[in-house]
Length: 415
Ligand code: NIG
Ligand code: FE
Image (cartoon, rainbow, N blue to C red; front, top):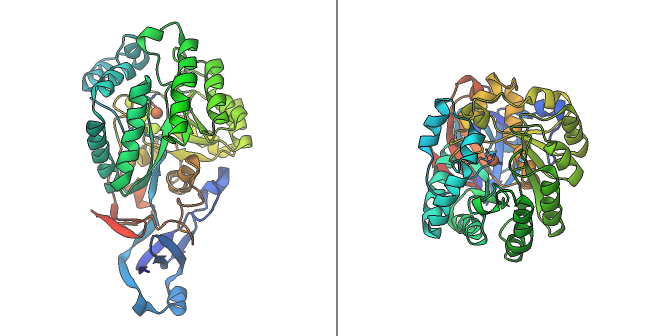
């Protein structure tokens, strides 16, 4: 057994818990001044005050990780990304700067549909190669678990290729990947005006293959005006649930359609985006325990108004934050950017931001019993920061202050 101990910290931010944190509870991040963390193999064995821990163990048996008087916290979890895709859309970004609208570009056959073309053309190897590089970059920002979606194939072959790429990357990448099937992400050209038929195609032809081959744990849909309506979303997600997948939704992003309410009705694990969510949607998410995943990078890049995270927390929701990394609406995997936007434009406190990127993000991908906090029995997914307090995360604006990344008990990144 490999035994390690993290000593000489200023604080250990535990985010302790085995359940998501709702509302006011998001501020309880469980700071232990001068804490220590005991690691055995890939798991956390104990956490507490350094002086107490040292009384209970024989230090000689442990490899010491010296935190150099700095803050220690759980690894970040990026619980909503589209990190496997072919091609880029840098022209589209320039069009948007000139005032073009994201949905109009998509209606013209650009946007998601343009990435669908490039992803269909890419080989499995190319998707694995570029996806792996994106995860390498995430690791530098302290991300230890990520969620990734398909949705740039829309056809059977390419959807499966994207999902397989994630399985392939998982074989040798330290970051844990939670995989989501997002077959109904856009309406392909040949199904324009026949969205019901496309939903049936996804249900009859693609979903069964995904489930049979155990290629995804979650199902997701772009529930939006001009994409898939509530009825189509309900049909697809109900079937996915029946077949054993857990549910997520791209909900109430551009238009208030009632995606959050649908998430609550179907017992989805999360509803994501929520820029336009109604008060009823907020109430339903809080009551039914649907995680509200907010993606401020997308609002920033699309110059939209931010989701009202403040209101959601004040009304008892469990909020998570994620990057939404994708080649169109939010081409960023920058955790520091997300932290800055959440603090300065969504009025979340440093404590709420920490919770939203750790334990609540773990909950959004159903990993809350194994990661997202520094608690005995959980994976040793831990960060050492470059400053003595987690409060520097929003304060040192837009800068990566992660110094050391420990994944499954191993130091995998030193910045
Ligand atoms: O989460 N909103 C829909 N889907 C993605 C964007 C995908 C893209 O533009 O390529 C999102 O923002
Ligand atoms: Fe997304």
